[in-house]
Image (tube, rainbow, N blue to C red; front, side, top):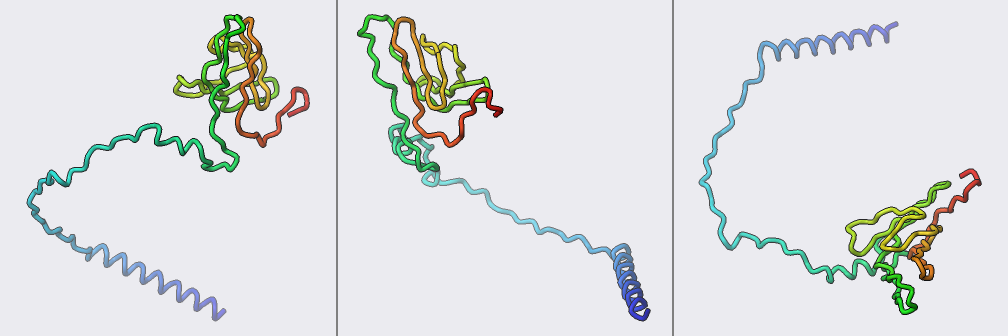
Length: 173
């Protein structure tokens, strides 16, 4: 009981202190301070202090970035397209310069992310899509098979190894 009485007395004293502080703030507020005015003479930048405009380095200076691993130790440079010739008289043109960026496989859906050399970004293609006169006939976990009328099938492979298991149709994934 004595302890409870001391706690009530301490709490009452604390409330009285807060009430006194609130009363002081209401009747005797802190005066506003005046900010001093400072007058500075305008200065003009010297011509030598102006920095020249930024110039982008040539693209050839970034070749070292493509050749070395940045985040993934298994990263390698993207190989160029295989050399093709239409000397067999089939009339089919060579594969355009492209890189297989990735493959998306989800149950029945199979998409290939392909970056053409002249395109600004990679696009997705499904089986049956046409790509520069070639038709995509198969999409596997690490390759795309292309076919042109009267020409041998061409395979474009991904450069890196996938660490994700490939779902097979009908196995419940």
